[in-house]
Length: 209
Image 1: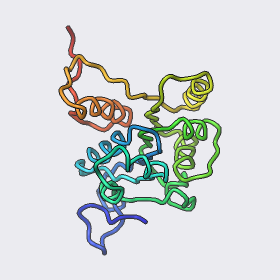
Image 2 (image 1 turned 60 degrees about the vertical axis):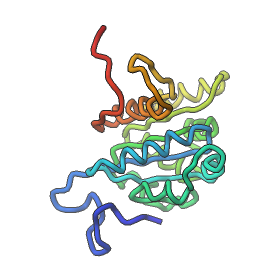
Image 3 (image 1 turned 180 degrees about the vertical axis):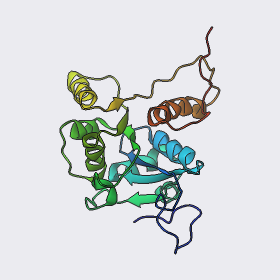
C-alpha cells in the first residue's frame, strides 16, 4: 500500500517526480525492538517537512511492540508516512536501487534486524531496503536499541559500519537540559536527521562552554 502524497490530488504525478520539485525520499524502517517512540517521532518530524517524502516499513514485531509501548495505533502511525510498504512485499519500490532515495533510518533497530542487515539476509522488505541502501552507497542509520551488548552484537555493528552504515544508539546528551521524554527522544532523532542532511531545530546544539 502506498498512501497518497501530502498535498496532492489523485491525478497528480508521483511525489518527487513533479517538474521543478526537489524532494528528498527517506525510508523509515520500524522493527520490533523496544523504543517504538523513536520511529513514530521520526515520522512525525518528517511529516512536517514539505520537501521530504517518507516510505515506511513497519514489521509485524513492531506492531506488537506498539501495543505495549505506544498510545498511538498502528493505523495512525501509517498515516504519518507518505507511502507505507508491507514488510513481506519484496517487490516494493524501495527494494530496488533504481528507486532513488536520500537514505534510510531504522528506528528502533532490533538486534535481529541488525544481524540480518549485517549478513544481507533479505527475508523481509525492511532488511532488503537497508541492503539496497548500503549497496547503492547511500546513508543507512540504525538506531540500535539494546543494552548491554554481547560480542555478537558488537561484531554485527562493526560489520555494518565497515559496509558504510551508521550505528546511532539512542544515547542522549544532557547539556541542553531536557525536561521531557520527548526532549530526550528528539535529541536522538535530530542526530539521525543530521546524518541525512535534513535541517531541524529539535535540540539545542552545543556552542561552547
